[in-house]
Amino acid sequence: MGFRTLLDGMPLWLTFLAAAGLFIACWYLGFRLGQRRSTGDGEGAGEIVGAALGLLAFILAFTFSMAEARYDARRGALLDEAVVLRDAYLRAGLVAPAQRDAVRGILRQYLDARIEGVRTLDVATLDRRSKALHDELWTQAVAMGASDRSDVTVMAIEGVNEVIDLHVRRAALLNARVPEIIWVALYGLSVLSMLLVGHHEGVKQDRQRFGMVILAVAFALVILLIDDLDRPTRGLLTVSQQPMMELRAWMDSTRAP
Image 1: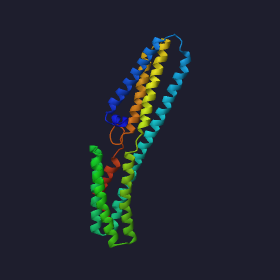
Image 2 (image 1 turned 60 degrees about the horizontal axis):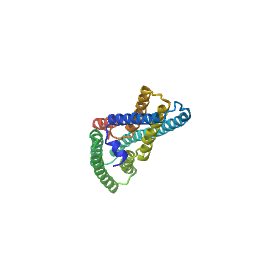
Image 3 (image 1 turned 180 degrees about the vertical axis):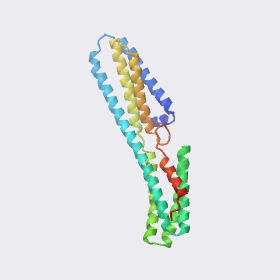
Image 4 (image 1 turned 135 degrees about the vertical axis):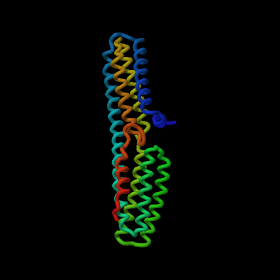
């Protein structure tokens, strides 16, 4: 089981508590080790501690930026998909009534599956259902092309094709996560930094319990935010499905030919 899989299996609150507890424990271990060789003067090590904390702050900022970029990409893909679905629904009005009704019915089913899949967090079932509906859509597109090759029919077929293409992009974005090696490096550097800080304080006989708890909690909060942004389907910072729900309501209310 990989480190990313371990994090995904933990609720966010447990991730936060585990990270904060780990950092505090590392600081305390470093402090106890530093006490054993206490000289009362740790000024020389202060620069090393500062460099370690600076490097930790850099990788935290780097990882946060990476997770936020992926979150924004998923949100953009959802908005693009809503636009493409609406466009395909309207373009279906350009073809014969029987084919129009068939395509629009499949699009409504597809949208229902998308909304329900996000609500239940059943990504595997959503993917299978989406692919089955894509096959049905393309069957209708082939039938439209066989019966009529006019420009308006081509436009309707292009609308169906764009729906299928957007699904591929969205599925790829769901798998675009912060690489596992970066998570390992982030936690590893956090552990080493807290050990160094604790060791430095132990050598100087300067225990700052309250300050270290605050520092550990602050680092854990940043890691919590990164982890939340990196979870595509569950968490506190999930992409809103409101555009999809509004589109579904519009499909029910519209009578556009």
